[in-house]
Image (cartoon, rainbow, N blue to C red; front, side, top):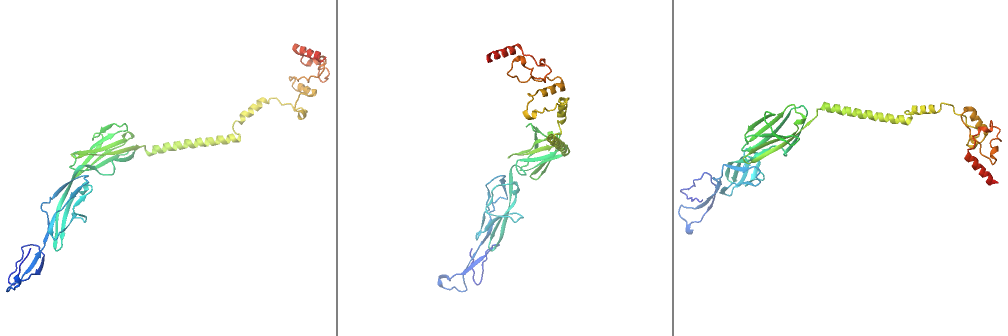
Length: 363
């Protein structure tokens, strides 16, 4: 934009904001015109955000390629940034979200600045829609409780649009599923903006109440669910009693084994049985050991010792002395210590015949 100026009049452009850069120009044709001088003044343009920009933009939850560009004109070229309204969070233009989440929904401002001009801004609301999202980490949660207590399970859902209801399903330890309602347990569901909170309460919980509880909800974009694994433990007093009894039994058994082992090593057990067996076998006094046992180690020699045994018990029959090379008629007669020869047992017919044959052979 140019403005011509002379000494009598001055023309100013009709603009709210302007900036001027002026320079002197030579006279026309190199000749000076009377009372007229020339100056060339160039005025800049303020930042102007494209008026066709929408006031509201929709983004899909979990979208990985969301981008929003703010178009601005001006001279000199303005600098454009994005800011979340009422915060100090800034992003470059275009605005990009690597993954859209429900917590990104809100009002953002396109801000344009240029030297010599005031800042220009426009508010744009980003509306995030999509399938329900369960708050928390992971799809499965583990909860444990003692027998007889009250258990409260809950899940929080964010979605746009909000689902009509939240379902609770119980899968028992036999993999059988049952949809729960207020007749079985206490279910409470609340709504606030784009958020739903549902809770399930079980009073006086028992072991057979254990299993997997599924919180499930659906809208036009899809379904979301979370598995809550509930484990019911036995009450602490019963567990302590069982452990104490088990420990006592183990302790008593250990002490008994140790006592039996020591008694056996010391000979305190089974000794009375041995004594009784000795008493039964020793009902009569044992005869004294013959004198010649110490020398020969046998009782087969000497007639006096045989006589002693016969006199002591009267029932023991002494063995006959060893046979000598004599005739059989004189056997037993040469030993005066015997009462008479008939005290020895007679030979049998076989032995006599064998003895007779030996004598004939000797001859």
